[in-house]
Amino acid sequence: MAYQALGQFEEATRAYERALELAPKDASVHLNLANMGRFKPGDRRLPRLQKLLSEVESLDIENQIAAHFAMGKARSDLGQYPDAFRHLLKANALKRRTFEYDEPQRLAMFENMKKTFSSDFMKARSDGGDKSWSPIFVVGMPRSGTTLMEQVLASHSKVFGAGELEAFKEVIKECVDSHGIPGSIRR
View 1 (tube, one colour):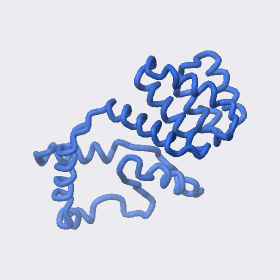
View 2: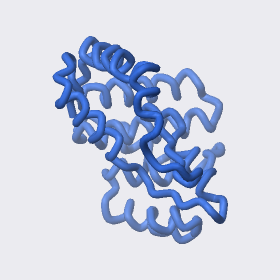
View 3: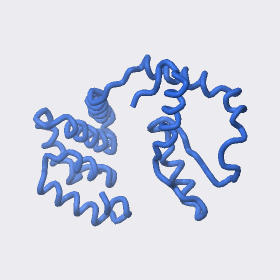
View 4: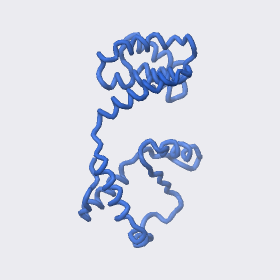
């Protein structure tokens, strides 16, 4: 993964190939290798991935998820969209089972945030904070493009990307705790 992150794709491919020799059932390696490039007819990555999928039920849930995502990518690249969708749907259904999500609680939290951080609340605090134009905060929901936005901004020579910070979440939690707002934020 380090080679891939550094843009050294040939080295990354060789490392992933070697990893599969050592651990052929490690679906995360199959997924990383699948993401290295588009699949073409006769792709040499496909037989190993098909073999892994033939015994996918024997894998732990994380490996099942990765195997289905990898095959979804492969089938999509090959234009086999119904099969790709089936694998992606399965991967997402498995992933959904790995975490608890309380939709009513989340909706209540957002409603409380909207009420708490009203225009009046913001106006009352408009003189706080850093007066310079230097700080840039990219705030958004998960999977909404905030990381990409940070990378675009950080590509400028005068901008430093600090990575994902928990500071905003901590400030919100402190505010909720100090004001006793119902439907408080859970971690």
